[in-house]
Structure formats: C-alpha cells, structure tokens
Length: 116
Image 1 (cartoon, one colour):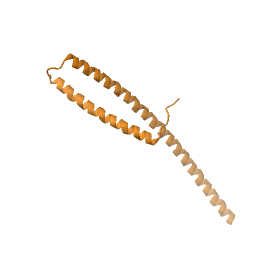
Image 2 (cartoon, one colour):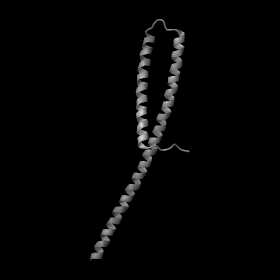
Image 3 (cartoon, helix red, strand yellow):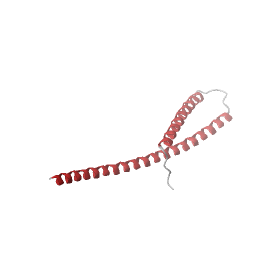
Image 4 (cartoon, one colour):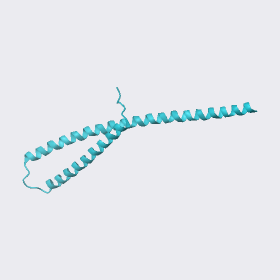
C-alpha cells in the first residue's frame, strides 16, 4: 500500500511543525557548538560520567535527527506525488480547453454556413 494523500491544511500543519523542529535543532546545534568550545578550552572539573552522559545524549539526538529526516523525506515524496497529480490535472484541463475551442470554432462555422 502506497503512502496516503493528505489535505493541504494537514500538509501546512506538518510543514509548520517541521519548521519548528528545524529551529529547535538549530538552537541545539548552537548550544552544542558552544559546549564543545568550552570543552576545547579545557574547562576544569568535567567528570568522565558527565562526558559519557553527554555522549548518550548526543547519540539520542542523532537518532532523533535521523527519524526527523525520514519524516522530511516522506513529506518530500508526498509533495512530489501531489505535484505530479497537479501536472496531470493541468494537462487534462489544457486538452479539454483545446477541444472546447475546436468545438466552439466548428459550431461557429456551422452557424455561419446555416445562415448563408
């Protein structure tokens, strides 16, 4: 079974949530960079337990980032599907418009012939 289609409102809510997640990730990365600078500066009193805990937290963070990336990939796939559907609809509408214009021309020509 393929991925299900979602409404525009649901996609909008999903995109807003992803924007919030991106902002949160950016803040976390800034905090991490600041913390790493402090570690590089040789901050005294950092225990091995604290470092191990930090590594566990970073591993969890990496896992969450991978999960979020999979959601972003799924959203990209859904967007591509919607875009393809819209392009197909546009092609059908253009074909219909061309056929309508042709029929209108034929009808106008038939009317002119009938008046002669």
